[in-house]
Amino acid sequence: MSKPPPNPSTTVLRTVRWLAVGAIVGLGAAWGVKFWSDSGTPPHAVATAAIGGPFELVDQNGRTRTEADLAGRFALIYFGFTYCPDACPTALIAISEALDRIGPAAAARIQPVFVSVDPERDTVAQMSAYVTAIDERLMGLTGTPEQVARAARAYRVFYRKATPQGSAEYLVDHTSLIYLMGPDGKYVAHFSHETPVERIEEALRRAVGG
Ligand code: NI
Image (cartoon, rainbow, N blue to C red; front, side, top):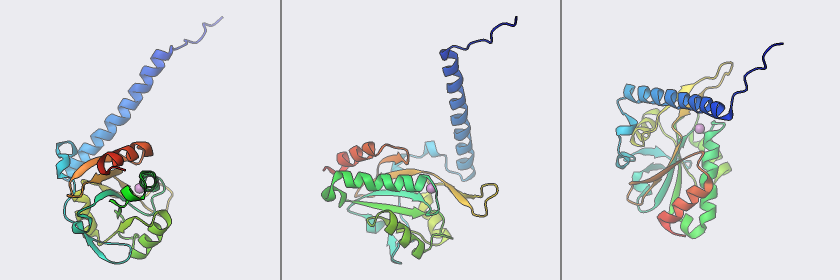
């Protein structure tokens, strides 16, 4: 008779799972550090005060927009692309829901902004259609590749094209952070597309009241 197979305890299973998670996080961090050191901007050395700054882009109506258009109001700023199948719609819908939850008076004090990291495909017309479909309160910004690159640098956002195997269309890997910026253009808080909408709502209430 053969011995019964070892029955690993849940503790062992848990440890194995944590090691796996740790390895994934570690790899991600190593990759992030490599990317940022390639571009000369280590993310953890950057103070949050350094997030934001001047930009010049074009909105979904073809109008030139700069950081001056956001002055005096809070802003929720998210970088992504309209063809994004997952993170972008999740983040933008969370923004939209959080604004709904705090009510119109408080929401009127916050400008939600979506900045394209895919200027090639995100034309003004494409951005207009997208913003109309997601939330009309959104300011959808795009521009020349250089304008987009400058804005992304200001917000410490990285992005790069990636074509999945067997796909004709490219995707864009990108930083998925929702920045809450103050009326003075300074960083207040950030969330990810995975932040529960209740947490975003709370942070917005704390910041603007309502
Ligand atoms: Ni995305």
